[in-house]
Length: 279
Length: 313
Image 1 (tube, each protein chain N blue to C red):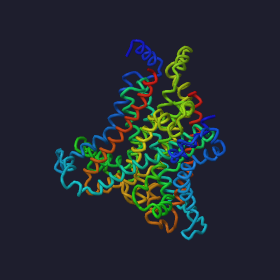
Image 2 (image 1 turned 90 degrees about the vertical axis):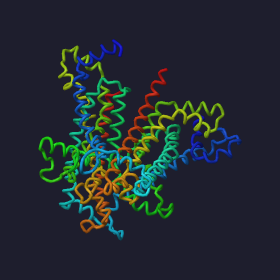
Image 3 (image 1 turned 180 degrees about the horizontal axis):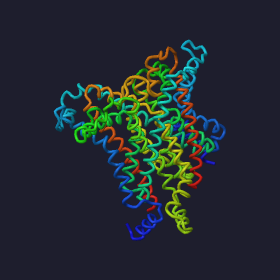
Image 4 (image 1 turned 45 degrees about the vertical axis):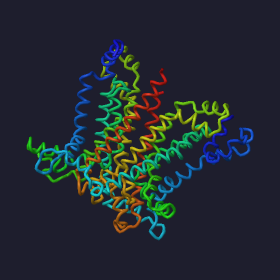
């Protein structure tokens, strides 16, 4: 930190706009410790050696047993289903939402507020309400598309709308899409090329952020799958937790860690954008 | 304007390979571009109608019908039955308590983060961790709390063995409505950090300097300037937290396997058993009740949010 930085910081502390170092670390320390307790408890639980006490790596090692695939078949089915659902949901975001957002941005500036409103509705109509109406809709979907699990992604595409919209929109706002596409058209590219080779590279960060956050949402989704009687990671975890809580906790930790890494990389995407524009 | 051809990118994308060689500049396409433009909106419109609009309408309207399709007000009146009102009451108090605690603790953390580099490792760690805990925890948070304060949990055992304190002296409350309070606070605080941080970071340094120049103290800065500016955002975030707890299902379902202590769980039992309280389509009526609460709360949130953005211009 430069001397000037330090001086402004001290000034800010004296003015009272910023906390002093001690106050900051007391607050962050106390909250940090309290909030790490449940996670630490999960880690220690996954290492417990049973009622006798003591710690062991047996539960983690059991995942690599030869018969693990058989014992935890439901869990692996759930993981497979959730990964499939994540892929299809990202597909829906990329094929249905993204082109619509670009189209509205370029052609229907007046509809931007409408689109924003639609994309935020899923916050006001939570999954537990949506699922009441989704049950009859899915009885039709099953008749048309069959009962395979991937159809659940249609509902997940709706639950990720607010997150995906925000991620893509902030990128759209930062890039001059109109000029870019006009430039591409002037240089005689057709719209497919403009979209693929001009717009998408510029929207890469927003698109990636939207995809990552959609994956995180889908991996954590429980409400809709559970009430429509489908198997995904979370419903399988809850089921496994009744027979083998250790394995359930191990997979919960892994899923939380994966979501954390996904979101951390979204933050990194944002940072490279800013430093990139400065240079 | 060349951009007027944008719809092609959506509606005609599939055919573009066959058309690539035809001379379809803006001029030749003019006659049908109005139509093509709107065609580009149809996939999204259809999708949203089928999977958002129709389910919402069914969810909210089905409460007014019997299974045979006759109009009835029985279910909606059923919302005022004492036990249903009590459920709404539990949902209200747990949402209110956890929202207030979450908002206060979250705001404190935001204050502590003032002056740290927004791009620094501390902030990215807290941002990402907050998002995970606030939005994607669900069932997994229930596991975490069973491991921490379940009847054989880390903290439970530690307190009992080291200090002789039995937190479950009067029965194991973790699997009751009270048990949801610590778990909900655990995802409310991170949500507060995510939503309130931008407002707090938007406080302008000049306001503090003006305050100091005019002889104000730290106390006057926070009470006379910062608090009035931040109040709409703070209460807006508080409402968002309330809505978040009110509509949360996964954590509660994982902790409380039986019964209908809060509204989302009552919807579960209505959906699973079909004949709660001897009424059909009660799930629809409950969904309607929830949507009414959510719409009111989210409306308040957006009003307060608009007020906030005034200061951030």
